[in-house]
Length: 130
Image (cartoon, rainbow, N blue to C red; front, side):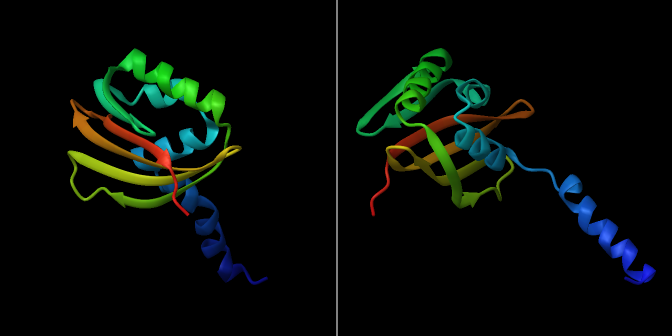
């Protein structure tokens, strides 16, 4: 290998360090891990959750318990971001596909900037239709 390719090779190794994942990607990765507590850190004080066919407004603590129950019943294996809207700095929206041991689920979440952080204000979890 010639030495004139060394700067390019170095840049390729450093690229993942330079690129920061946004909140959409971070939350998707937390869903893949089934990390309820870390996902709940993004919850607003009250948020709208639709889980299968039940929709309600929950406090942050109630929402965390609901999501924890979901992960105990459905162990996650993989996640894929299907759609994202992050063009507005105050609102972000994502649609992900979560593969679990009991099937695939479509999860959507809306983030709103509160103060200097993005918080989940709405989340829907439904069986993915094939």
